[in-house]
Amino acid sequence: VGLYVHVPFCAVRCSYCDFATGSLSSAALERYLVAIEAEAARRAESARGVAFTSVFFGGGTPSALSSRAFRRVMAALRGSFEIAGDAEITLEANPESVKATLLNTWAESGVNRLSMGAQSFDPTELAELGRIHDAERPGAALELARRAGFTRLSLDLMFGFPSHEPSTWERTLDRLLELAPEHLSAYCYIPEADTPMGREVLRGTRRLPEVDVQADLYQTLHDRVAGHGYGAYEISNFARPHAEARHNLVYWLRRDYLGLGPSAHGLWRGVRYGNHATLDLWAGALERGEPCDVADPETERSRSDEIVMLGLRLSTGLRPADYDESTWAGTLRTYGRALDAAVATGRLIRRPDGWAIPRALRFLSDDCIAWVMAEAEREPFDSFASRSVPSQPCPDRPFRAA
Ligand code: SF4
Image (cartoon, rainbow, N blue to C red; front, top):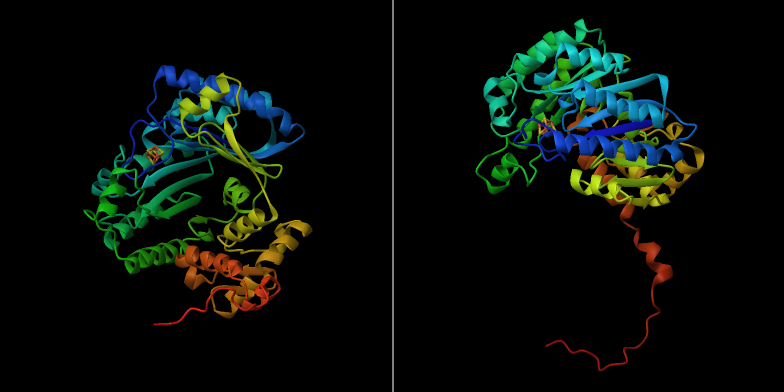
C-alpha cells in the first residue's frame, strides 16, 4: 500500500519536462504546506487501520524543500497516516540540491531510499536537456548520500533524445557502472508538445535518432547493465537483487495507493482519482473546503485494462497469482482470447505462471501491449449474429446503380 506526495517546485524547468512544477517562492511554499496538511487530514479517515508500506516523495524536486519544510510535510503524513516501521520511504533528489544537512534531515525523518536524476554524464547533452548540474555532480551527490548512510540509491538516465549518440551513451553507461547505484531507471525520450525540446522535435527543427538507433541504445543498456548484475525487472527499470523499487511495484501490480499534492493520482478502494494539476487549483479547492480531485470509479473493464497494461511491463509478466480470484476472472473474460492470440503470433510467451513479453521484443513492449488491447476490442464476426436485424425487403424504391 503506497502513499505518494507530489512536490511541485523546481529551481529551473528542464527543456524536455512537462511535469506539474513551478518555481519556489516563500508564499507558494507556505500555501503548499498548508494545503498538504489539509489534504492529509482529509484523506486520513479513509486510510484508518492501513499501515503504508511505501512512501514516495516525487515531483518536481522534493529535494528543493528546506529541512524545515520537509519536516513539516513528514509530520503531516505521520499525524494522519500509519507508516509501517519497515516502509520503503523514497525521495526524488536533484543532484545539485543534495547537501549533508538535508541528507541528515531525510535520514532522521525515515527516508531510506534516494532516487536522483542524472539523465546523462555528457556535459553537452546535459546543457541541451536544460539540466543545471554538471556531469560530476551526480557522482558527488551519490558519494555524500553513501557517507550519510543511504544504502538504497537509484539514478535516472534518458536516451534517444535529439542528437543522442551511441558513443556518448556508452560513456554515460561506463560512468553509471562506476558509480554502481543499487537501482537504475532509463527512459526513452518522448517529445511533449508543451516543452521547448518537444516543440522543436514536433516542428521538425530537431531530429530524433532513428527508431532502430533508439532500439540499439536500449539493447546496449540491457547488455551493459546485465553484465554488472542488474536485472531488468520492468521495461525501464533495472535493479541489483532485492533493490527493486517497492513503490513502483505498487503501481504496476495495481495495489492501493493514496496520492497527495497537485497533479497526484491515487487508486483507493476501487476508485481512481486525479488531483487538480496546478498548485493554484489544488490548494484553492482545499482552502474552500471543496474536493481537490476528480474521481473515476473503476469498472471490471477498466480494472482489467490496467492489469494487462501494467502487468505486462514487468519481466515477471502477467500472473494470475498476483490478483485475487474474482479480479483475475474478470480479466480473463475480457482478455483470455487476446492473450492466446498474442501467444500464437509471438507477441507474448506463455509461462507456467502467466504471460510475458519475450526479451527480444522488450523495446517494443508498448506496441505489444497496444496490440493485445486492440485484439480484446475486436469482436469475432459471429458475435454480431445475435444483434443483426432480420433481412427485410427495402421499403423504398430500389437503388439503381448508374
Ligand atoms: S528537475 Fe525533474 S521535475 Fe523539475 S523540470 Fe527537471 S525533469 Fe522536470
